[in-house]
Length: 591
Image 1 (cartoon, rainbow, N blue to C red):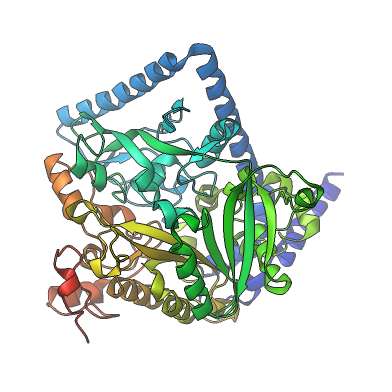
Image 2 (image 1 turned 45 degrees about the vertical axis):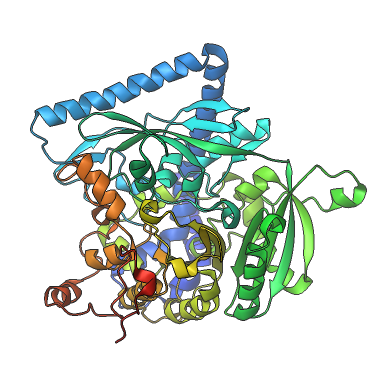
C-alpha cells in the first residue's frame, strides 16, 4: 500500500513538473544547475506546497479581519486604541533600550526580507542590526464614515481594508490591487491605482502619519504640523522612523464598475488615446489603464462607478471576473482584441482585486496551465501563491539566477513618452503583457519629496503633469528561446533612459544603478533634511541601502570606479541632477 501511494505521489509530481515545464524546458546551460532544477520542480512545489500555504495564510487574514470587526463592535474604539497605544509603548521601550546600550547596530523592522513585496531576498537585516517588531500592528483603528477617513496600523493589508470598507460603500481613495500588500508598505513606498490619473499616487490620499523616530519620540505628522516630514515619508522606505499608524482619505463607491474595453493597434494610437482620456478633466474615466499584448496591440480599460443592474440587458452584462472558475482577467481583456469595443458590469470587489488570482500575469509563467479550465475548477479556489512565500523558497544561487531569467521592472515616464517607452521595453525585455497605468504627479516645489517633476512636463496652468507607469513582469523572450539575457545591461539602460526623460523607476524592483545615479533620479533634499533633524545617521539606513540588490547580484565595480575617476558610469548618458530648482532651464548633457 505504501509503495503504491509513493508511486502515485512521484507520478503526480513528475507529471505536473513535465506539464509545467513551459519556458523552463529550454533554459540555457549557462544557468546554475540548482536554478535549472528549481525551475523544473517549480510547478509541483507551487501547486502542492506554496499555494496551500498561501491559502492558509489568507484564511488567517480573513479571520483577523473578522475578529477585528467583532472587537470594534464589542469593545468599542477605546479598547482598540488602548491596544494600539500599548504596541507603540512597546516599540518606544525597545528603542529606549537600544539608545541606552549605545545604539548597537542599525535599526530595522523584525519582519524578514522574504515577507516583503520587494523582489529582494535580503537587505542587510541579518547583519549588525537591531530589530523592532511591528507585525503585531495589524488593526484597523477607526473608520469615520462621515469624514471619509480610515486610520489603520501599518501591517493591515489591502484585502483586509476591502472587506472592512465595502459593506459601508467605501474604498480607499487609492486602493492597490494586490490583496496582501500592506498599507504601511504603500505609505512608505509607493502605491498606484487605475484612478491615479485623477488623484495621483497613494501618498496623495494620506492625511496623517504616526511615526516613532530612532530616539523613541512619537510624531503625529500632518501637512500642517510638519510639512517637511509629511512629504518626505513617501518613497522613504522606513528610513525616517517606524510608521505605527496612518490616516487616509476614503471615497464613496457604488457596487459595480462599468468597464469599457477599447482595443488599439499601435503604440502611437495608444499614446494619443491615453493622453485624451487622462486630460478629459471631470469627464475622464474614474479608472483608466491599458494592457499591451504585443508591441502594437493593446486594450484600454475605462471604468466608471455604476449602480446594480436594473434591466435584463444590464444583468447579462455582469461579469464576476474573480470567481475562481473564470479565465484570468488579463486573458479576458485580451479577448477584446478580436471582439472589438465592448462594455460590461464588474462587481466592485472583483474589480479592485482583479489581478490577485493571476499575480497580474506572472502565474502563467510559474504554472503554464494555470488558466486552463480544468486547473481553475480543481485548484483555482485555493487562489494564487503569496509573493512573500515564493521568495521564502529561494536561496542565494536561485535568487541571483532568477534576476537574469525573469523581469520585474517599472518605469514611470511622462505620458507623451509612452510610444518610445514601449519600443524600448520591447528592445530591453521582450516581455508581454505590459502594464500601462497613467498617473498624476504633483509639483510642490521644495516639498515635492522624492518625485520632483520637471516643470516643463506639467500641464499648462496646472501644478501637476501626467506620467505613466509602464511595467514589465515575466520571462524575457531571449530566455524562452534558450539563450541568455543581460539583465544588468538592459536594466541599467532602462534606468538611464528613465532619468534622462524626467521619470523614475520603481524601487521595489531590482535596481542596478549606483548610489550616485540613484540620487540623480530621486530628489533626496527633503528626506536628507528630515533625517538630519531626526538624527537618523547611524541609526537608520539610507533609502539606497534599503532598495539596492543583495551582494553578488550585480557587479557595479566598473561603474563605481568610473564615478570615482570623475567620468560617466558605463551604460548611458550622464543624467541631469533632479535636485536643482533650475533644472528645467538646463540642457541635458550629451555623450
